[in-house]
Image 1 (cartoon, rainbow, N blue to C red):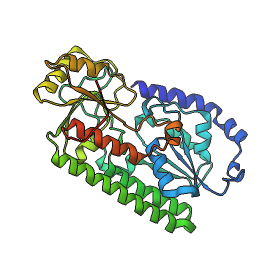
Image 2: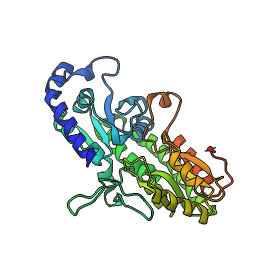
Image 3: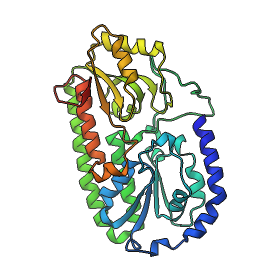
Image 4: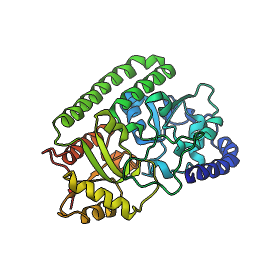
Length: 336
């Protein structure tokens, strides 16, 4: 519930100044500078930004709001973000509770032709409810009522979801810029082939794996990916949890699973502390399992982009790490 309260406060503060901000920025900023004729596409998360770059190339002016590397669940929009959304041609966002502030931004749009792509709405009934699985620690304020269902927001961590969303992005680009329709469609077709190729590589890896179960000493945002390939999992917290400290019961449960199921190691997320994973390992008999790091693509900053990080490069590296955790012989970056 803390996310909702924070979002409401941010929206209230930003809406007070959004009118003045729009006036000061002007509604004709697209006419200024060398990028004036290009479509303006605002993306909240890195995967959407990277998909736009791959499909649209130099024909758009993409704006990536979370380029400082802030996590989706803790992101607070600025007045400048509201202005960018108000003036853009296409906005692409996840659509979960973490982005409750987006509606206020959309209400201030000055573009009557604005196209809105809500990724969770695009995926429809395939979006998963946030669930507590065996051994998973319940967040202190994490609950569900009949009126309020929390959904797993990490929809981009499925290559099959990416295919659907990229097709929708392409259609939006074509509607906004019919003269370059063939360009967008051809680039999307090429990208769809790359997504399908990596999807097959994941499926082939799982088919050969020694186990079909994973163990996370962290939040678990990979539910969409694991369900794509029929994988099971144990984890310390749900994917959208804000918890960082695991209880003794959670650690001992995961340690018992780590030992009894003979997993090769414990998985954690990029930028997470390894303390929980280390505690899990310390509570096993052998105490020599590895810690493997996966990237949830939630904190890709501008520096990483300049270094050449892409959605496909991260998902390929994740495939290798998953392979190691599933008992494959491929190398992955483990830490002792």
